[in-house]
Length: 366
Image (cartoon, rainbow, N blue to C red; front, top):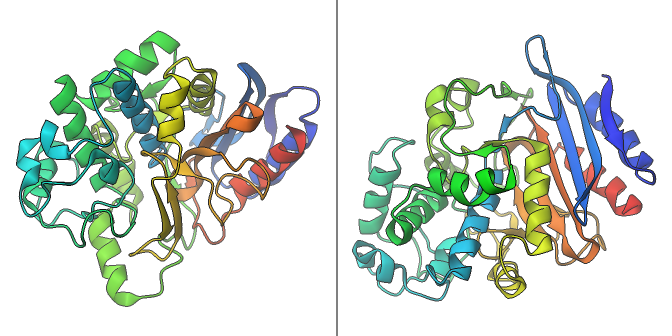
């Protein structure tokens, strides 16, 4: 597979590693890196869809990479004094106090400890308002704050409703207003059918929750994801891409995602104390449902024992958010480096080494 793009002197090993990654992907891949405001890596290979080459402008569904964008928006609202991590959710959303949730904090929602990993009611996957209404009346599976478990989709419903309550806006409109338009970022939430997006595909044997061996909790996972990743028909549908799902339907380019984290490091989006607050440890441990090691700030993933954000020593202060099937987006604050790996071929976590290979090469170069 032909590698296209450029790297700055000193990053040649990253290009070599990217060639290896491209060879292990039957779809398309992109990798973008910024260092202190300057682009140092912009590489792509493969195809976005039949007959269409992957370019630096190729947009792709970001899946849970969207959570990092939304965490940025929450940090911006925190900096404006509109949303407080330590405040009770019910202060902004009174109905949420039902079913023993009166003391749940915004931070518990953002750090995946609230105990609402799935929607109990029969509500459409793309129905933000209906899902938020159902979650407001739902009992948590555990005492909020006592356990950590990834809230794959419900994170989005909960945060979307919080944002709507404090701003009066949908999260997609806020993304456009605060990030995309003023900073020239090709990022959307609620993407119209007219916008070209890479066609997603599943690698043979693709599956989720590869750390999990328990059949009972596997059924909980199935309730969490609601079949979203079982078929390319759903994830490639205009309805899914058009939904403003703050947990996973964002669309963007590798360049824009890397630039987003570069802007965060530069202090262009939120003051340093607010970013420090958002990227310190708020929850950590083994996922109570998935058995995977977790480490969260306020909506951001943090460096973990399995090297999600690079090899040992890359940057203990790393933060960002990964996405289903292999996407990896984030920053190494100690080095002033931000990065984004995008792909349209979903590979299972226990066999997918693509982002790890790239971050290892970047670690040596940067």
